[in-house]
Image: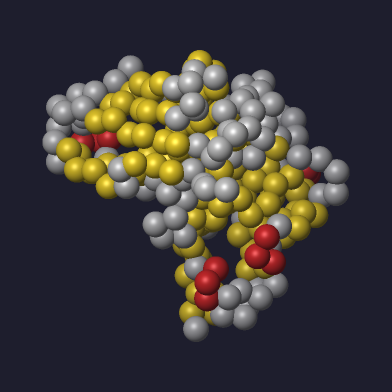
Length: 113
Length: 115
């Protein structure tokens, strides 16, 4: 069965430091890949997505992600984290003919001042 | 353009009761999907509606049901509530249904607590 793994449940970084959140998926073909962010009391907001083409994808709020087929990974990066980036981050994939979204369990990001 | 709205935002029920949650999609969006979010299971897909028809369904018991109205607004109902139904229920809307994939826009969710 298709699955999405976010190995890091919780990450703490200092403001201004770089960030990388990991995401691995299990699927035979190339899926559609997404990163969402959820702030407390807010709905999920799409940060970026990959469907095809250039494997380095730019998103909103200064985030980027790189699709690596050989590693079945789609890691999210940001060169300099801001305190407002503290939130829950979810990786998701769309697979199969029915196009259901399959979600990772999320990574909680805390930012130290 | 107004975003996805969900009502109520918070709900407290007791075991055995039933509950109805409402979702109003973004104007012009005709596809509505529902998700259950819990700390242990993460986000799980419940069902998807498009033009008043259920297009997709997740692996939830029959106690979970939904419907969509002609104005694209959607409701989900949970009957005979169990403690394990306590969760954040998220609604998302998009312009087109599966299998064509379009970006989903999420509402803030309804926090259901079952006592």
